[in-house]
Length: 190
Image (cartoon, rainbow, N blue to C red):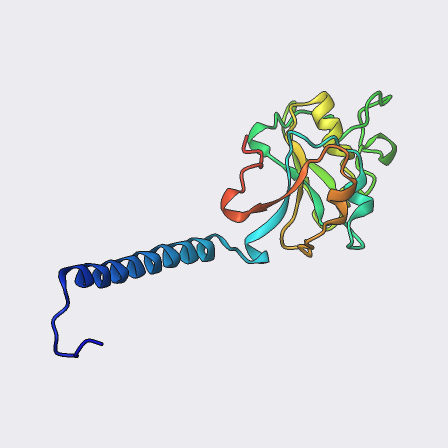
């Protein structure tokens, strides 16, 4: 056994230094991995459900499959791409006999879409979130006979943000995904 006062041999010194350097390197790598894992871990509030408008088929299941009594899915109007025209495919049903605002001529079953005359032939369309039930009839009409300025989206202030969204399970187009807020990009922006 060596005396405490005996100096280390060169070999022992290098072994001790190597052990210390390896320990520091291992601690650095572990710390970096832990930090990266911690930074990438996001809470449930950092994620939300979102509909990809390019995939949505307006099947109507958003209205009937949401866990809320009135769906958190609402019609959104991307007015920057809207023509504000008199013959809106999302406002009027197809093949109406005359263009008037009688309920039987309108696409929306709840009367959530209203319009205001701007100038001939332009009308401004607004959607009442309170009345919208997320059925998608207006968005389907707009996408079939218009420019697609009406689309469906999950309103985050209404959504319960379930981890297992009932709507996404029945969506035939797989249009609903849980995405990080930082990667929210599937919105129409005209």
